Length: 392
Image (cartoon, rainbow, N blue to C red):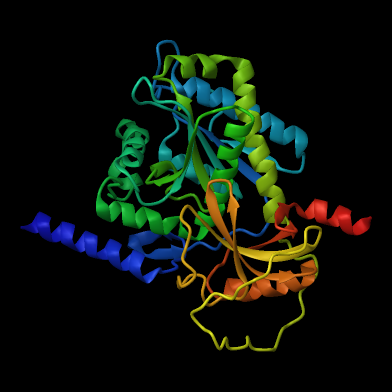
């Protein structure tokens, strides 16, 4: 009877969270279980933490000839070297640079203490011998049994740690309650995590010619307390003979690292395109009431060569109806495809200054990580490209 009540309560909580569409800040557990709010990072990507999965006496999954820990470390080091070379102002830190064991909770601690703006965990997958391809995860509720299985396998390493109950505060990521709690921790960073994940998948498919298994969400302990956007990348299946052979080749490891580097470069440009260089003037005008509240305003497409600045506030795997509460109360909402995600923008402005003023409004409405994006016609471009066009 107690188990039935527990399941019923869990189901009710999940239903209420999804039905109400609550926007919840990220929290970390403080002393005596008191929740302390973690504020989102500034719109800069100055520090990146790269986390090669497993290590030491934890080999991870394995194929016929190689362990996951070795492939993960090789790709991680190659990725870090590219970032350091191309972005000398970006500080690259690693959770490990050699074959050593690092507890899962300490990996996030390393990123947090360094003030990292992005946390990239690199792993290899295991499954049926025919399974193939790359997939990238953000922290969240298990959408499918397959996602749950991947999280369980990666989380099993905690059994090698000496003080599991203390380090993870008794939470069971495989329980309904644990899934809910973990999803709340990363909620404020979810949009950016999904955005970076989509870029990784785009370049895995485009440059590395990998089977695209998509952007997913699951309860990974290693991502649990990371106070920044964070993803876990499954580069490929070592249980597939062809994929194991591919990932063992140094040249192919370079390709995988370069794909992640390209995703990092695009993500960095996207985030830093929203940086406010001058303090926007205070707007004392209250937003005008929409006489057709509850209905999405129809927005005409931009001219082919017209450059417009918009405020992106959400990226999700599913397309929303126009009456959805998350978009109906914002002005000039437009959806565009961003890799495997549906991204939503509000407003359309001729310059950065007006867009940043609107960004303040959007953030006050609950979307704390909203940022400015630039379009030429209906094609997304970078801020640098827009600046180059205005200079000519």
